[in-house]
Length: 92
Image (tube, rainbow, N blue to C red; front, side, top):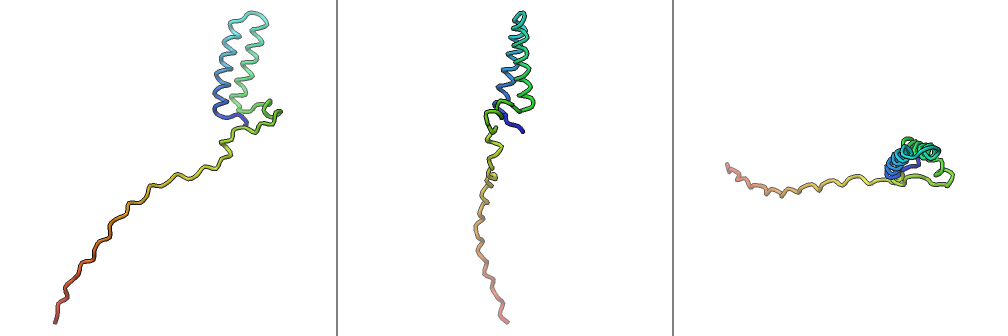
């Protein structure tokens, strides 16, 4: 079940890339910690599921449950009524 919205997904992508970059700059154990955190965040962004959200009871993006109204149609242009022409009848 997807419980990560589009905005949350984009934030996670940026954060995951930043953590991987920082992990590449740090020496030793800090490199592995930042890299692992970056990979976890990128994985949750890619799959759009977050186990922490499930544990906390978050239901996910609300936009997927909203019933959107049908787009409004343009009002039809009213044509003016034509006046009926009076025909002259021929008398016999």
